[in-house]
Image (cartoon, rainbow over all chains, first blue to last red; front, side):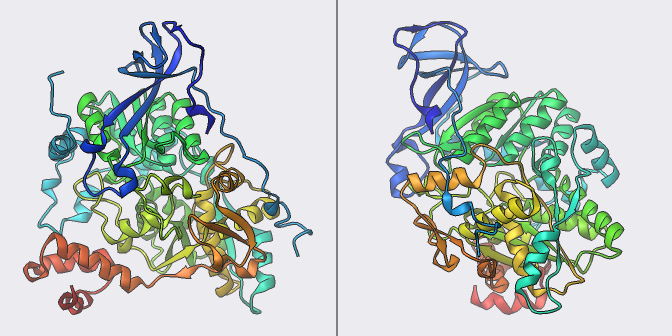
Length: 103
Length: 469
């Protein structure tokens, strides 16, 4: 879950830094009809990573170049977005399955 | 680029022209009426022979995967069933494909076709392994790749398996548009296709399905070679229907006319697929009833005008299993067979246990896929995440599983027992959807012929049901 937290230091982020931006694609009013109640209340949002094209601060508008070279813009959300998903905390209930400890 | 209207309704309204431009297929050639179309002609207009498909796939590290006999699991099943029962359980190790799943078979033909037709890149909207497969095949064919993926809820949280799938796409060099929860994924796909003029590597084109036919062909060949006969049953994890359709078509092309085609999905009934809240209460991201049932009963709900994946056309039986049962069988595969594999194939493996118990010892049941596993894409990750989100996880009777609330991991193998679905109910549900597309009073003889073939029933069955619709 950690990779979606805003990170990095305050101040301007340098050109060429790997960042993640966020764009609201549809506001709640613009969304598709017939959504469940909970989904209808929130915007439809996109996040995408790329290299920063112009200096920008966290929370301000930023332009990036993606891995395939497309230019995209949005609000600068994360500096050096990373993946921290793991195997999770051990579920002891799984361990005996298939062993002699499981009758 | 000229300013186009990007509102939801405007983009959806341009769906047909965007599809035509991004696929190079004119579906109007095959469509006869609101319910019927020439399915076989659509499948064969791709003009790839099985030899062509095999050659294309070998170029990009796809296919020719091992088929293993699970001797210890088979022995464990034989210990709990009646004398003489307990079929051999085999598994096709599709994790050996580039990108780690059978989805590479689907993506390989789309990538080849995209290059052949002169597209510079390809796009897929997917929640699953297909994204990684498209990215991996695109990388090998020198195509740019964009994956549109539903990743996080309104709190910005994505469950570990989804996050891992997105990471894999990026690792293969794709641009990943990570979206919040919602069916507008399709809108985003259309918008991005229009913006880039890339190829639409949809799961549901003839390319996306014909690429899987080699999986059925390989199973037929490997089982015949080793056991001197056709497999009695092949179990297929079922979501969108492509896996089942392609595998069954391959088996039929090889002449396995009597092999029972069994679908299996994880039962997630009660959870809403478009719900922001329910999104992270599912411990499976695909291969579940949220896709399996709606796609079986109305295949044309997809991102192409007519779906090449038509599961009821080939399905003989449909089993549902609980999340806890799949996690239990995943542990057995690991501990008894020394194979650590991801969730998709283990869903059908769970159904195979149920089937093997009822089949004779000299019979063969094939689980037709495995997928890679690792951080995030692992049952411990999913269970740990579930527990963090307030879902109860315990050992007990799997019949006490409540999707989104309680995951009950069986205490013994005897408790693993897939629930067989009423096929006629599913077929009737399909007909009701067809009746919504076009009133039964105006169905022609050729409509009825198509519907019967699409449901694996005779025309008389369809005619008898018409007054109920």
